Image 1 (spheres, rainbow, N blue to C red):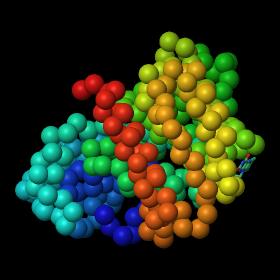
Image 2 (tube, rainbow, N blue to C red):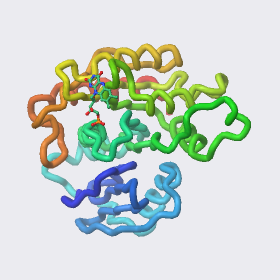
Image 3 (cartoon, protein in one colour):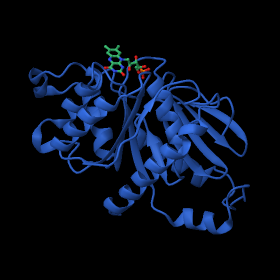
Image 4 (cartoon, protein in one colour):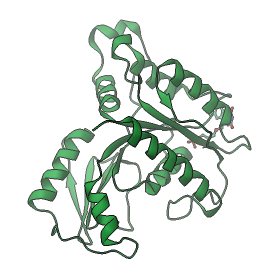
Amino acid sequence: MATDKPRNVIAEQKGSPEAAFLLCRETSSLFLHVAKSTQTIQLIDNNPAIIALFISDYLSNNGPSKQPSQSANSSPDAERRQSTMSTYHLAIIVGSNRLESTNRQLAEAIAKLLPGHIEVSYPQIDDLPLYNLDLEGERPASVNRFTDEIRAADAVLIVTPEHNRSLPAVLKNALDWGSKPMDKNVWFDKPVAITGASPGAMGAALAQQHLRQIMGILGSVVLGGEAYLQFRPGLITENGEIGEDSHQFVKSYMDRFVSLIEKLVQR
Ligand code: FNR
């Protein structure tokens, strides 16, 4: 990927060893990285499903040669295996609406640990109005966009800070919108993993515990185990990757989640 990767990426997909794309949240720009060069395309729609169609069309019509190039850390066998694997879509919800959110940095670093057949997007939650039953007659467009994105996702990863020993209100609000009406609850049967960080030694553990309880009540299949992290220097490197001390811990947690998704999501 290009070294000048934009911040606030809301979707990311590795199309092939030669092609990848990033969608930048603030500008709705699509950064296509193809054959070692990056093109920027202004989008009129930032719905991940539409972007995925655009990318697959781009790759089949104008994309790079279908000859797989052998990169330093992949064998022809590994590439063949990868190409026959189903692709899964993971929605990563960041439980902070802060521009410089440390949990957003953590979420983007975690996305880098995922194998190529897991595509990610970052559904926006900070533009959802406060839940109000009076709005149910005609749900706001931002709410429909959010619930459509979650419904279309194969699985959800929630990366959240802790607010007063619980989850932030902006995240709870998004969960509430997704839970109603009851027969359209988008969280039901959805594989969900939970992680997050805070500067305190308990690393958002209580927020995660509370969130685990809520997701269980909403009918999600929550990955067992815990992954709470103290946000301290070195947790995320300058290159936006998980630092050495926590790398294996976070990777094992995500490997377990990928394996759960592969078992639960039928193709
Ligand atoms: C916090 N913070 C916090 N941290 C913690 O470990 N336990 C807590 O209960 C709280 N409570 C709390 C309440 C409120 C209202 C705020 C604003 C903050 C600190 C919080 O975890 C810290 O600011 C994180 O860095 C926020 O995450 P982002 O926004 O950087 O992702």
